[in-house]
Image (cartoon, rainbow, N blue to C red; front, side, top):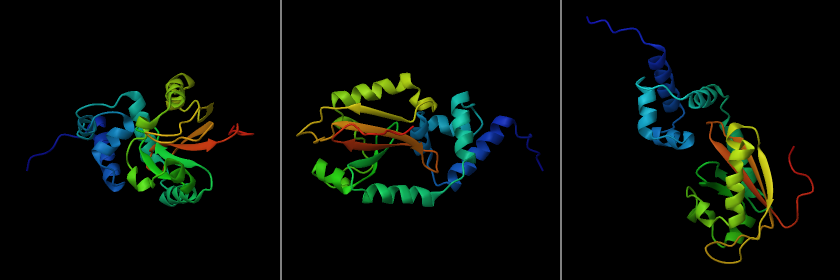
Length: 195
């Protein structure tokens, strides 16, 4: 019987990553999208052929050890969908719509079924684009900032109406490690924003 060589640290991490990903029912391309890498890169990590960069390694470790609470994820989705405010939840980096409130759907003049899983970036106003650009300097993706409020002129027509005068973005993580952004629209400047 042929004896296999002992697993090195890279191969062991890759095995743990593959095991966690499969148990979490996350496909390689989905994990790649969350981390901003290619599916082939995730495959190489899992096979122990390549080490994740230190930032990706830390993110993966955090994701793999985070307490998973899918009930909390479902509660968040339910609260967004039932909110009386103009609010929606997107994936932070891809801007894919996860859910929205009825007032937001009324503003958009379409049900969110038409947009679920699609990036909303193509509908961004110049102010939204400028706010997005400022996130890097704020340390948004390095967990140095978790909210931003900004003014927008909105848009009353194609490609999608945006009635908000002020927008609040709040960043947090779902139980699978996905960074999400809760987007809330206001007609007047919010009296108190998150600390």
